[in-house]
Length: 417
Image (cartoon, rainbow, N blue to C red; front, top):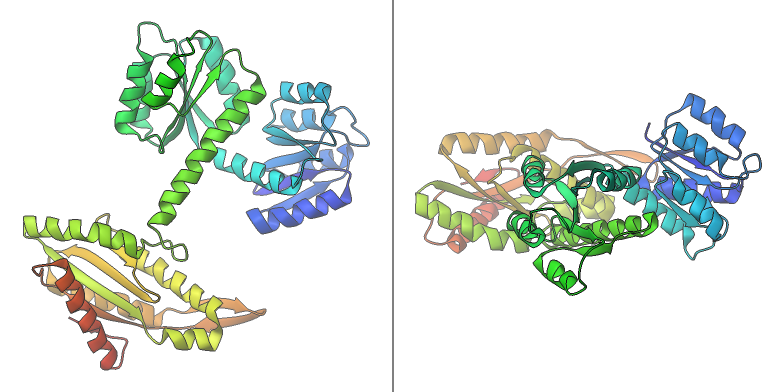
């Protein structure tokens, strides 16, 4: 099922797209150069989606697209050039999108459109409109774009759906809801979800121009006037979703180490004081643990920095696996240094658990490939553990760091507490 179908009579287009999809999206492809080949492939395979040229030698008027849609294959259409009549025909069909081959960097646009469609499959959208006809229309367009769609006829119903589905990404809200204040509804949504977390696109055919900035200031991300074209609706929805994705990605990497995916040094020193203060207030136990990968320079020198990166990612994966509690703070605070702040109840049990983790890493074998050669890489770690809740977080960090050096001086691959 995790394949993409490419339909085009141009062999070069097929070759380029197949290579890019494999490299950029890491999905395999099947290729058809005619309507006949398309039918044969579809009779034997299932596909995530299709990229299909509008004109084929044996299907010159979009018959291949109709066939794909009839067989429930989400489809992105390619056209040789811009033609208003063909554009209208394509938009009447239930396609994800269409692209003109002649635009600059078309291959990048296709990859972007595929990626966006695959992301949409995981994204939830809520349509709020008292008109069943308008709701159905917008829901159908959004489903063609591969979104998971919920619908509500009034504000109270919408808030209930949001309560049950807090992962909804976008709300399409009709401005005129009988006996309801749309601005107040936006305020209610924004009390629970920031503008960067859930997008709100307001649609309306009866609104004074001066109300639009009021809605945007209240927390809406965009506004669409009714009646709207299907294409405008799709573009504005995609733009809003894309902006949310960009903001969330920026927020993610502001506090994440891009290599390992763990929290970074900045995040640690913003959040760690809060954990320390909570432990002081509640008189609970808090351990500060500094971990260093032993002889990491030798790993880089022996295998190369690319394998060193694989070691760091492997270690981060095991850290996440062992320390999974919500309140455990784990961060990469240096090149091969990691710092943890974790609450505990029993000192001996915690030390046993840390020893089990150290031994697990010692016995772990990381299998990597370099220059077509399979390599088994082993590495060990040293730990410094401060179990006493000291008068300041800084004291705990200095103490655990000192104990880490004691572990190194003892011969590495051990724990000092």
